[in-house]
Amino acid sequence: MRKLLMFALAATAAAAAGAQTVTVSASHLGGLNPVTGSISFQPVLPTGEHASFRLPTGGQQSAEPIKAIVTAGAFTVQIPDVAVGNPQGICYTVTALRGASTLVLGAGYSCVQPHATATDPSDWCQNGVCNFDNYVPVLPPSSTPPALPAPPDVMTFWNSLVATNGPATTATLTDANNITYSASNPNLNIAVLNMFTPGNCIFGCAAIPSPITSRTINVTGLVAGARFTLIFNPPGKVAENITFGTGCTWQFSPSNVAVISNVLVIPKWANWSYVASFIYDGTNCIGTVTN
Image (cartoon, rainbow, N blue to C red; front, side, top):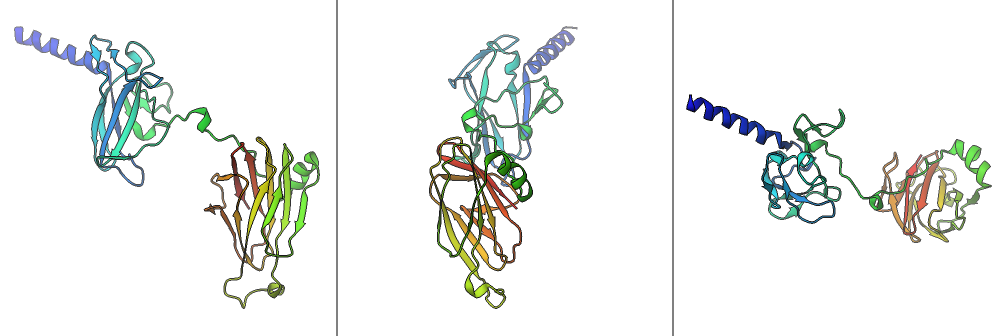
C-alpha cells in the first residue's frame, strides 16, 4: 500500500511539473542550410535584463539560459511556460549557434514566449507543443520598411497617376550617357525614359553578339516621404544595363524583376516597359521594379 501511495504521489508531481513546461522543437533550424550546433533560451524581462520568475507549483526558475543540442536542424527542449509564471510578461531571448560560435538567427527573437494554450489555430504553440519552425520573428517598428504604393503598370499610369498628379517628365534619350533625375516634388515624381538605340542597331543588332548599353541613373532633390516612379521604355534592339547610383541607398523589395547589386538588366528585344517605383525615407529609396 505504501508503494502504491508513493507511486501516486510521484505521478501527481510529474503531472504538475509537466503543466508548467512546454515542449519547444524544430526540424528545420537554418532552413536550406540546416544547423548543427546549439540553441539557447535566455529568460529576460521585456526590457532585456536577465530574469528569474516563480513557477506555478512553487520554486524560482533561475536566470540561466536553457540550452539544447541541434543536429541537422532538429532539436527538442522543455521550457517553463512563462504564461503561467509570476511575474507575467517574461520572455526568452533565443540564440542559435552553428558549431561553437557562428550566430544563426537575426533580429526578431529577443522576446519569444512559448505557451501551452494556443491563441488561435495558426499559433506556433498548440496543446503544449511549440513548433519553432512556425515562429514568426517580431521586428521593432523601426525595422519594418514603410508600406509601398502598388507600382503602376503602363496602362494605369496615364489613367490615374498623371490624372491626379499632373503630367510626367518624358525624355527620349539620344545617347548612352548617365542620367541625373531631379525628384524634387515632395509628393510624387514621375519620369518616362525612352531608351537609346545605338546607331548601328537602328535596323537590328542580330549581327552583334551582345550589344549592351550601360548607364547610371542618379537622383537629386529628394525629401523624406517623397515617392517617385521611373518608367523605362527599352528600344527593343539592344540590351540595357541600368545602375541605380547616387542620391540614396537603394533597397529593392521582391518582385517579378530582379535587381542585382543595384543593376537592372533589360534584355535585348524586350518590347515591354519596366516600372520602378520608390519611396524615400530620408536615407533609403525603397521600392520595386516590375514589367
